[in-house]
Image 1 (cartoon, one colour):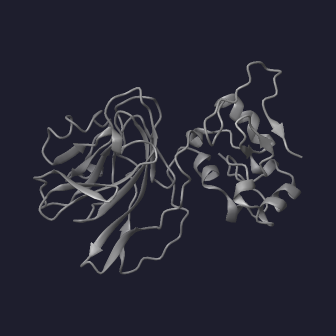
Image 2 (image 1 turned 180 degrees about the horizontal axis):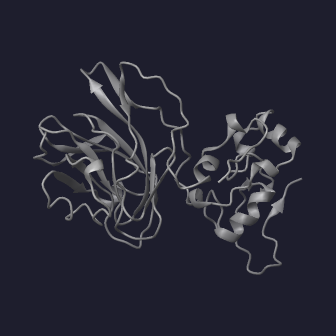
Length: 307
């Protein structure tokens, strides 16, 4: 699928446009320079993924392609280090299922796995040698929640939530390399791999690379596939948006290119004219507060355009 092109777009293209180009994993667009404090690149392995999982955003975003509670296994792209804290953010959830994210470690390399993968980590994998995983409480895994997990030098799995550490499981075999194992299970729909960090003698942190691109807060509009093609924008629109540094609070929250001129019934002025019809048709709610905006009839006008 062709990339969106626009005047100076290469420097100001939003994460949403990059992410929605397609559900495929390519090379990271973030350049970086490793240093002595770098623990190496960390993404999800692109081959060993569950049947219902799609990877994107440079292999850091993993999401289910169907609303199911299972078939959501992913693994780290490289072995992780002892005390390397892997940081995740839950991007989307669904409350029609019970249970939530499961995390752990395995000494079986992703490249050694046969497809399709088992539908669940617990008990399908944990019943086999070389796999250790713990279920997380649903309260830790709501959309927007950030957490971290790691394995200690003594073979214990720890979970970190809201700056509180919990020891959840012991007995991990530390004699062989370990890969992180994550099961996007139950209510959890998608997760973002933020980065990882490792304390070095309490003096400084070592982090994974490349430095992660910031994503906006979790949003159901991550599946907004009909992002306006910025190649169709008029030249003066592009110049006004990109060259004049429009304040963020005046930009359309969907395309992040045009000015938000549509005021919704809830009072939020957050959509450009091109995006508002797509939002109404596909979602029917305000992108900011989820207030219903779908018109009861085709002829009803539910928005106000600001000139």
